[in-house]
Length: 317
Image (cartoon, rainbow, N blue to C red):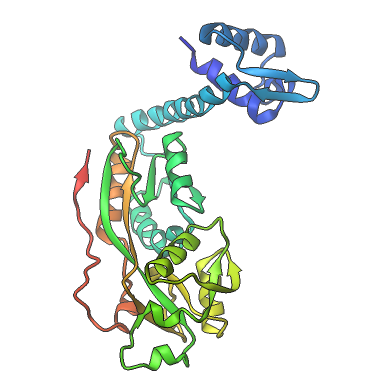
């Protein structure tokens, strides 16, 4: 059976690009590293790497094994941290993976409250552009817990926190903001507009494209950006409407924001690969109770509707 040390050597060789640099990074001799790596290849029954004149390249077997090796090393590290926590040693690190927009809109409030309870625990944050990137990273063992849309058929623990509502943001003088139906806007009414869009690699681009497709059109692009705050600023300046999570709209915002019709939302969860340890469980508890899905400063300017974004405390094992 492959050992953690051998898996560590595989990851280091791939990351460093050579046996020599891997040995230096791990502070071991190159012959010792090579010997252990050859033992790993014998264990799996074939080569994991192809030695090139400059560097190395994974074989199909190596490409298959590498994500599992990374996950095993990550789990081993978390096992040590979990044992220390259970023994009453509350120092350590909470590793948290999420999406950029959630890092902006949800996590500041949640992490501020949680860190007040655990001031001795560091936070390591991994941010991703798209939900599928986040899901793959979690499946590979990148972090203790993720906050985002729950992947289909997730087998770990999940704490559902509710639906995050998206709003159309535009400039204060936009006719859509002064229409009789405001603060609601039928998305088909904006079909002829140029939009403040997002770069194709952004998950927010997927949300905007899907919402407009459901309304029967494809958005024309005035400008693309990567981040919600930049899109909000461009929209407020009159470059075109945009679509962002309600919790990314800052207090005292001078532009206009409207509920799209049909409504746009995404369900968020906190999820882990395994049963959470006490520190991770406490983070999920704070997340479930205090995630700002619809901030008060935004809700006050919107007409009440029958739609609910209230979170659920349900837990799926």
